[in-house]
Image (cartoon, rainbow, N blue to C red):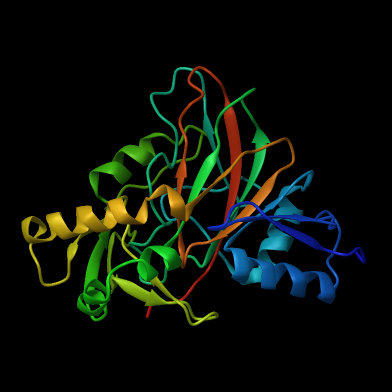
Length: 281
């Protein structure tokens, strides 16, 4: 069992931190886990360098956060069905996750966290951007916060961006269609309260949010576009690059992310585990 001292170094003033002093191929001590969990709540997205974890070790670390949740539109690895592998290959038209979103918010209980491990990387490029939705909410005017406080929005898996995104999974996984028993729509608060920190976060995203509950799409468009743009402001962001053996875990309850598509003609392979969450409130 690991006994080293965990060190946490912020990446930007907005969000994100690097974590060192831990070997994720070995079981964590309770003290190490407590440090990691607190850093996760404080910084929302954590990067661990040099972690050459196997799929089994990847799952073991993920389960420290909670039960894992399978991606509803794809099959996992044959021996590890809870681990989804996706790749960008030379000739593919686009990458997976190349827009601002929070994972699978069209589910009644979206995942609380996502844990991604780099398996094969291009020589340069392929970074992931993260944006802090605590800050997005806190920097809205008092009037806007008051208006949004009790509003809800409709989230859909069939929004155009996400329909295209699923086509970008080229890992040999058999993708499921929206009519194969997969939940495709949910209604959630526009502002959610984080169940562990108690902080409020803006909870609409360009990938999945289609309209406000009780509003038409046309009526919703102007305000949603304002909120999307506000959430994506650079001062709320950090940019995480990947190296061989990098593992990154982020909090879907208060972050959005964007996979940068700047490595055409190169191959990139990632493996993902999602940790189950609760109904946003």
